[in-house]
Length: 197
Image 1 (cartoon, rainbow, N blue to C red):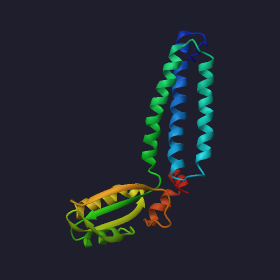
Image 2: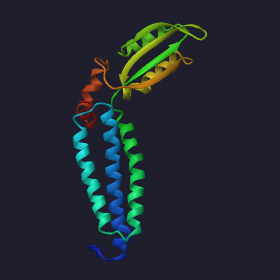
Image 3: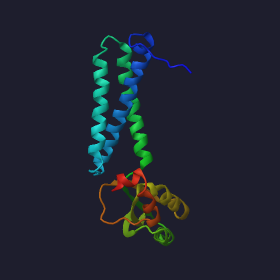
Image 4: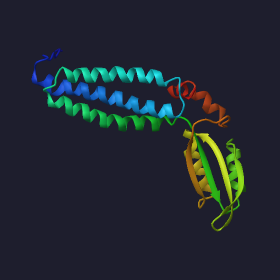
C-alpha cells in the first residue's frame, strides 16, 4: 500500500487539489448561509447562531486560501462555482428538512362535509368560513399543519375535492398545531427534532 503525498508546489496541488478545497469550503459555507437565512425567517433562534459560527469559519478558510494564491485563476473559478452550487445545496437541504408550519386555504363551492371530516379524522384542526366567490357562495376551509404533512393534506384534497382551489402559505408562529403524537415522538430523536424545538 502506497501513501501518496502531494508537494504544495506541484501542478496537481496548485491546479486541482487546492481549488477543490476552496470549492468544497464555499459549498459548505454558502449552503449553511442559505439554511441560516431560511431558519431565521422561520424564527428558529436556537440553532441559527451555531450555523452562523461554522458558516463564517468555512468562509474564512476559503478566503484566506485565495489570498495566498492570488495568481491562480482556478481558485477564483472554484470560489465562484462553490457559491453557486452552495445556494442550490442549501435550498435542497432546507426542502428536505421541511421545517416549520404552513397554512392551507381550501376554497370550494361543493359540499365540504367529506373533506372536513377526513381532515378531522387525520387529527388536523379545521376552521370553516362561509364566503362569497365570483360565481356564488363558497366554503373556505383553513388548516395549519406541519410542513412535512402538507403533501398528505393535498392528497386528501385531491381525493374528496379534486376541483377545489387551494393555496399554501408559510406560518411563522402558531399557538396550537395538531398532528400525530407518534410522529412527533420519532422526530425528537432526529436532527429535525432539534431544529423544531
